[in-house]
Image (cartoon, rainbow, N blue to C red; front, top):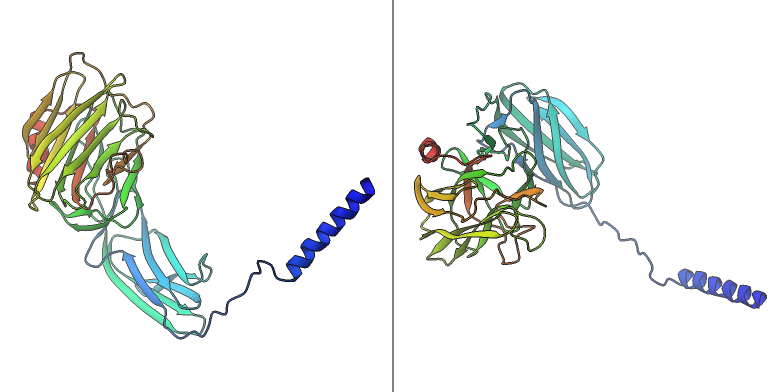
Length: 354
């Protein structure tokens, strides 16, 4: 039997080898064709007319651009103020290079970034951006303030120096103060919640609502799965003519709904939204004025079990079960505190930027 089995295995191996030789599931090389077109180049950062702001002690500027060629990119040369700082010749995708180049040690002042892309036949494209690099003075947070993102051309938290991770293609536009976050389909920002969460919390931000889609997540600190006894979820729902901003948060044993905290016509106006949660009560403010208050029968702290990330501009990934996906609205001047703030502090935040 052993001899028969060995003969069978030998025949099977020979058959498999023969099948491969005969071209079953072959890998057919494709000719790249003639290199006809010039390469293309898009510089996405720095942006034309926008300053490059960095935190004190941080000398890194990250240049972002995309180069494309119909056959193959040969090299990408990066110059600053006429001096070459890099010449890239190796790319994971030889036809489309998405580059984020970190430049260390750039001094403050006016600069000119020039990028030249050359394909294998010597055809080139060159583009440049003039920009001003500025080191920001240290931000002085209010008492208990643990996050401040002004969205002035970056997604940088001015308190801890951490930049939010970007998913999709959000952008920047004119805001209530400087630039603002401009949402896009399937786009949002994420940050870890380490250092942000506390038994009490306040959140302050400006929003200019785009009612398409008719519902979306705004700011979400939520655990995975359909669990609402932990974390905070701020969202909007409604129609093209009437939108409602709602809040849901968890205190461990139960969930709390404040929905809606405000109903309004999305007429293109900016709204200042504040949510202040203590163990004794939760208060919502719109444009500096209190609009809703929740008083629990039994005071309880916020529960953060399983909450490890915060999403800005969408319910994704943990609050999508009611279709609270990405928001196309504009956001500006996001502040988070590890305590409940007072009505006077709400007025201060509102008056600074209105």
